[in-house]
Image (cartoon, rainbow, N blue to C red; front, top):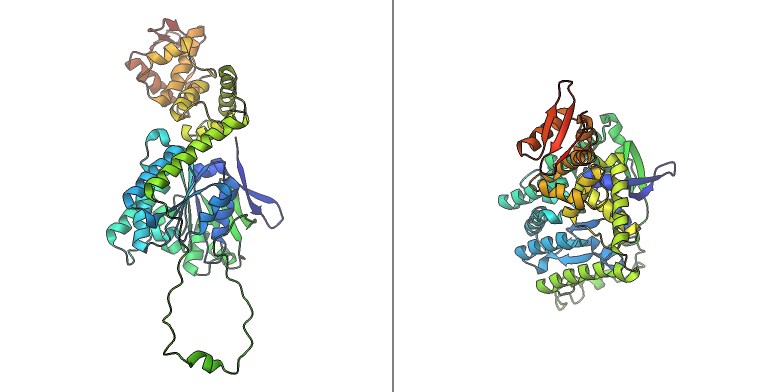
Length: 485
């Protein structure tokens, strides 16, 4: 199932969308000078994908906390919590799949980097059963993945850079899709930027940044000049989730905005004849200026915030039950089987990770009238393996016995094993190497043959090849055997 996020229009007025499922697998890099519209672009993406996928925003300036007013994001003021509390909150965020904004406003640069590193590492190290798909948006990414040391301690720089590298290089397998935005490509570590496959490049003027942007977009250096001519809110897009050729995109409108708004020009007062007296009269007795107070965030101790996260998750889970009548077990199983069948029949799903397809599964369940997915990630992974073997109903009865026999088999091998078990139970011809490879998610026939050897070494199956070269597979523990083929 494809979820498209409408980002705006091209110069001909045609709508330009981002494929959200593809974005989860391929990540996004946004670049543009201050005032080019980066924050507006990120806000558009977050607003249009809210409710479709979990969103976690690392916000150095506190600009995105207003998303909570309309879309339910929980704002976390990092200045109110210790480093260990931030890590604990990250674990709960992954467990309950809540969308949050981590505001780093009020911290010094090294404090922001240290906090972001602890937060990202905790997201990355979450238990496997919590590896749900999530967009991880990092604004001002050059601060957290700098090319040079700067004025922060070396250990802080290394920790922050390592966390950002893990997010962009290894986060995909854990369901974490990095979306990073930067003012200067030249200041962003290359090994972090290079892991993104999708790009939205906004206005920039420095030659070194234009050259790097042109390289990432696959443009010749002489074509890079057009990056200077982009207007505010215009970006050049490229990538598998956007377009296969560089395309100019005018980002559409948004429904929320930063707390302070954008400064605009206003008329000056009329010239005054006593301007000097306004400045200098009584200067000795004038009170010393005091800095304007920052808007105080709502005081919320750590334990109270954790309780609010848990309560929000409970309310989110309870809401769908109140909106729709409960379905019977048979009705739920019918919806699950249909969703699995549709997922397996989509050609693009063959090579996708189970954690990414789980998001598609939950959406299909909601469309089928089931508010909460009836399977967790581990259960879905097992059912997906069975579905890839052509078994869409719950694998109980004889297939449950087959799964019990293969209890120690790795999850990614259950599909080929069940394909063999299904043919053996029915006495059908043995599946070919091509069928086993497709079920395993590979094009390598040698790997399919190694699967047979691996299962045979563990006494799960017995493979026989007759003088004519035809193969048959037996499952001794169940007394099943395929026909020779």
